[in-house]
Length: 451
Image 1 (cartoon, rainbow, N blue to C red):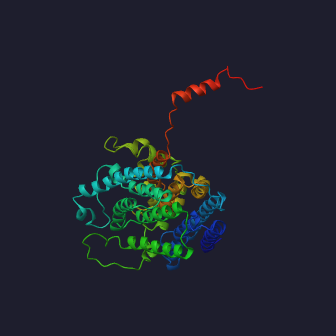
Image 2 (image 1 turned 60 degrees about the vertical axis):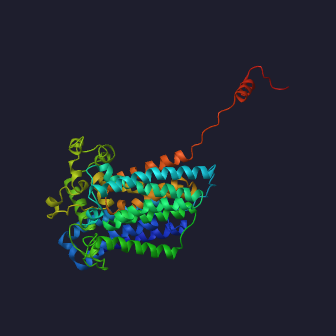
Image 3 (image 1 turned 120 degrees about the horizontal axis):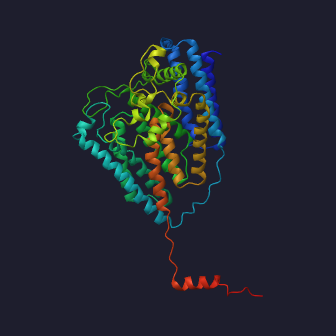
């Protein structure tokens, strides 16, 4: 089987899975509807453009390309199979059943204020410690800095605040102070995303707002409007990356609207080239982490480096300090050096971790997305926010690594669960002494059933 046939087969699998998902669900928010195009971009369009220009052969031979694309085809198929296997038919929507919805909405807003407020404080701290907005955003791809990782990552709580308040809007209605809070928590994140030219945060904000608004309202945007919006967001993301070195406060550089360089540039920072090289290097070296990199993200990363400077080395994964451990052995195997800061995409990242077990893991990921979508439709409430989070992080999942997903998922998901749990908690009314005595008498052995 030739490389071109494998590319065509990958595209066909993605296309059929997207059509099957939409035909079965009639929902533009089904996970395959927006994850499918992202997979097609990295695993079909990128290599197709490189192949047509002939540049891809500067990095790989034909056999290596066939080897890589066969695994990509299996990975894409597994994700689609798992997602479709969770069910594509919309479940029956259950009644909201949220007792005292006004009370719940108020508590959700309080939870949103806490989460969003913490995120806002973290963001302002970054700006202040950098010397102000001009210093924070005065150079390309910057955005402020703090020595504490908690401060650097804490601004993501702004999105949790937005989702909790959108949950309140869904069960109550849009009120003026809800709108004011949403604006306060949205603008810092939007500023950070645009002025630092970061595609992940930009996409995440649109996903949080789109999913959070329409799912909480029980509505969907028209198909044509969704497609056009998706194309516009995709172009914006590529525009930001293309003009990354020209976007900053005080910039006098010109911008280009030609975003084709992202796929056409044949360098070791290209996701497909770097991902293919890292996958082949892992196959040749037969070195895999078997979950240790991911465990380090959950167990070791939260410990401040000031307390434990050698935490990753002591845990046995010093490779995490460079490209999340995905660049090991590329130079020895491929003869070229992977660009610093590059990401390989989800299939190569999982292969580095689990070798052939990456395929069933991808099927599991697909099933989780499909199941969360069904819960968001059928159960609503906190499941809507959780699905919005997964949707927002899908760009990190497809285009980067699990390292980019794990800690963001935890930072967003946990406050959402806690906020909803507290919002729906109702104190039980304490019974009066007379009611307690009456209940005790009813249970007494002296009370006989009537004959």
